Length: 113
Length: 117
Figure 1 (cartoon, rainbow over the protein chains, first blue to last red):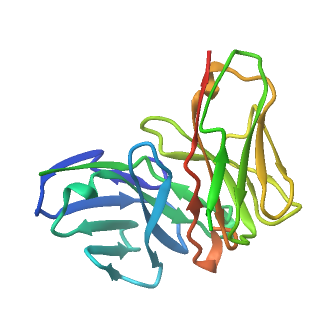
Figure 2 (cartoon, chains in turn purple, blue):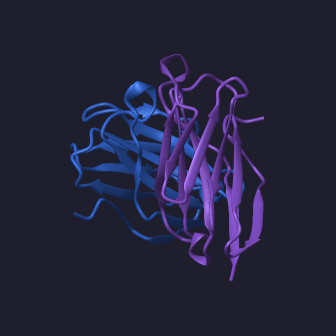
């Protein structure tokens, strides 16, 4: 598997439902970030969680990080049609792994109204 | 405050032609990046510049060159375009190198859709 794999690849839900996306990675990390990409646009940063944090909230977003399992999840509560987009996790690798940000392949979220 | 701008938005090339993709940021960021995005593969780093005057190869540098013209501008050049370079190209910037302990987020431009025939 690659560094930063999202699951599921695609998710379709009704407006008002919660959406959960998962990310797994292979190496140690300094932090993990989630980005959103609307169709035909660039990526936009959503939230960052540090390696010593376990949970973080921002509005309707909740991110968890389990470094022992090398996994993270992004929860979007009370989803809206405007949340329809692709969501990417990105792992910030320490110096011994190149000191860079590595993106996963993304989860396509469709919220039906 | 425009953030990260890229030109052109769209480009069609024939195999063997050359072109330069332009990127500029007005956030006084030190680090800049070029990615390509292909269906089902996420973003792959082509080249990056940790700070003005330095450039380094990323994951997929073959067939590309870069120039960090000044702190604001970072260009990507395709010397002899190939159909395998058909992709969407994104430029990004961050205050400092995005990996490491500095907790940086990256800011992305709108992308350039390149087709090589």
